Image 1 (tube, rainbow, N blue to C red):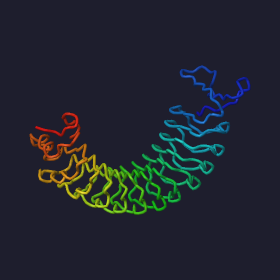
Image 2: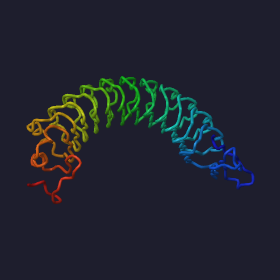
Image 3: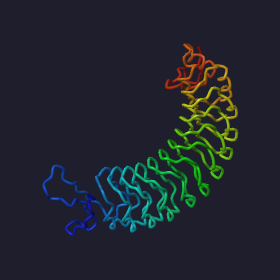
Image 4: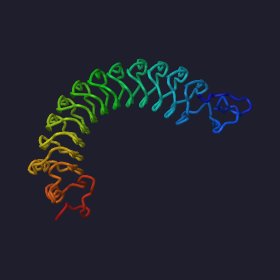
Length: 330
């Protein structure tokens, strides 16, 4: 049970006690008593076996509350916490997003690892900047288009089948939709400030519809069914491209990626050495992963790649040996 906040007249005027209902009774693991200041701006109730949110009214100055790893089933009794800026409720048993209307100053909300099926109850959170609802049971992206100040949206590890209803999120920089059931990249045209897009572990077969994402720095598409490198012609700012664990046989359409530093292509179907020639144009490449491709079975695999791309700093999981300031030599 939640350890209630109890004002104690015998204590100093600026203190609050948090104690269990069974305090004073003999038990194998007695509840801990925490002394806190009601004017605290930050409190962490991580892993406290709490089952309910209640008796938080004394915290009139609170800006950050953390209730991770508890047994909370319902969002409630937060109406007086209008000063709250960050609220963490990850790893609980919450099923519904509700009772957040009073938190008009909230900028950070984490509801990951709960049992939520629907995105709702966010109508009043117009100042929200970072929203995390990963590892739930969400079926659809909805009811967030009014969150105009949102910069980070994390909806990974849900049951989402379609990228939709993102209009209005023009300030969004980071979008995480990995480990869902998405079959197509679409409806991203309005996200012109997006710098990171993660769609790992979905059912995507084609790189498409990202022409408007000209500021994109990081693109993560590993563990899909992609067969061809394409559709990135208007993404010249890419520094990281992750295409690991797909069905790609040829490296192509990457000559224009002058800023590319990280290229993950392991666990694909690259068997023709000549296809690696195209990487000569990517002079800023620092790390390349090509292990578990057919070419990696060549006994001279590492030597051949280093001769082809002597400026590499890391090949697969191994750093490239060379003297400081020099390129690799035989």
